Amino acid sequence: MNVVGLEGVAARGMVGCDKEGWELLVVWATTTFVLPAPAASQVEVLHPSEVLVPPPAENVHAGEPGHSTLLLEAPFAYTRMGTDVHCIARAHAPVGHPATEVQVGVRVGPCQRTAVVFGERRWTRRMSPGAPAPFESLPLWWEYAYGGTVPSQRNRMEGRNPIGRGLYATAELAIGECLPAIEDPAHLMRSPDDRPAPVGFALQAPHWRPRATYAGTYDEVWVQTRAPLWPADFDPRFFQAAAPGLTVPGFLRGGESVVLVGLHPDGTIAFSLPTVRLVVETELRMRRDRRMPSLDVVTLDTERGLLMLQWRATIPIHGEVAEHQVSVVRALRPDETL
Image (cartoon, rainbow, N blue to C red):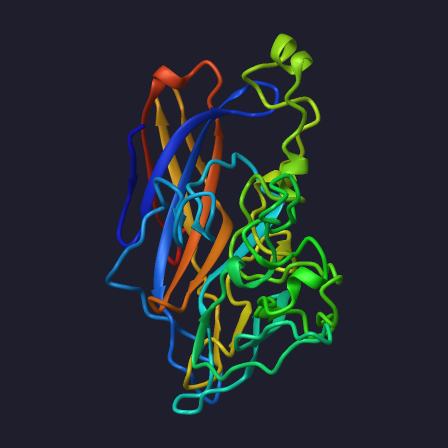
């Protein structure tokens, strides 16, 4: 598809279908900003980045695909129920002061997630957590949260986080083994038999629970009556990939407060989301479509010091795919309205 982003906007598009098979043109666009340094007060204006990060063309993992944290997901959602907040970050002890535990938190507008991050701990023979080792930083990846797969029982896994740590076949087999490093401060593990909800800040993979349960039923009835459309029981919550607590009900609009605690060695980062007004203009052979996109994803990448805002516009185009000429995504002028 001929999709163009102008003046600080990167864009890509794809033709797809909704649940009932109506053809859609879905346009995704990104704007990229530089995260501010830690400061005593909230920063109100962020500077655009010279590095423009486009919507990812493919999934990006921390390591082996399917067996490591999903850092970026190639967009494919034709609809969403709210804005996702995704984090690519590390927990940091104060610079020059290794710590045995660090409190971390992310708040964006009305949504927030907190956790305590420990240095390496192992279960003792008394079935209690051992003392944590000092550390300076730790990736906030799902590998360090509660979960995993029992090595001797490949069919036994923590469906909410199959790549994590802390799940053992028996309490006795946990002795000397690692505890999760990232935990909910209100529900800390006290015993190897505990089964807490995994705590994370990065994306949840499509095959993890509960996300996978929203994908619908792919059985013989689906093959005979609906394939290749989405199943009749498909739930659009499947498109929400954020960790629990990091999906905004409704969509962010810019101006919301953002606070990042424990994600930088020099202290707390606080700023306001940029207020960005984009327009997607689509030229078809016989008509023109003009609409403002929704803010689908806020990605906080403290590793690169970047804030990426990912936008989506869904344009009905059933029977007109061949009529598409070009879609242009640009910023609205201050005095311009739709």
